[in-house]
Image (cartoon, rainbow, N blue to C red; front, side, top):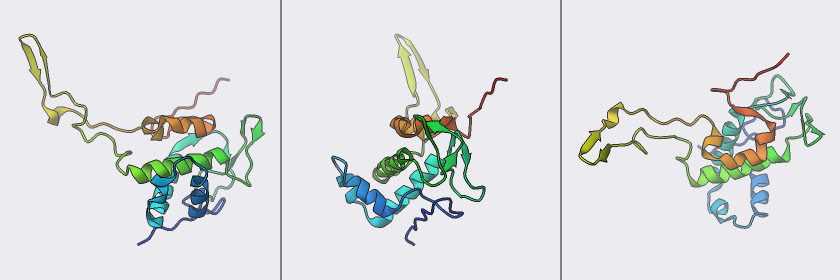
Length: 176
């Protein structure tokens, strides 16, 4: 079944901040769009939806504009570069982040899966005559805390809107 994008602003069933047409137009403006253009429309839609999910896994300043909206944007009650967030638009940086993350996910579908439990683990260590061998079964699997762990460059797009991390470990401190 083909993926369907629902990009209605403040929509109760929205799954994307951008449409496929908007993404295609964006990639017409970048130096090398071939790694986006060579994907099927369905693969592009799936990548856009997945990118939106990862972007929505982060915690943001401000508040949702509507309690019934499915996604975390639009938001209000926060400023970036002296520009107040409004409920009538998604910031362009959030859209740019979704485009660029979707392109990455479309070209590396395993990027967000984390360590399989053996990648990067030490099998044995030797120092002169001393040798230690480890059991791979006893070594823990790797985890990805949030999308910034894999794609730190995303912070240049949406970092100024973020509280600092994903919901799995973020703690907000207030003095008062």
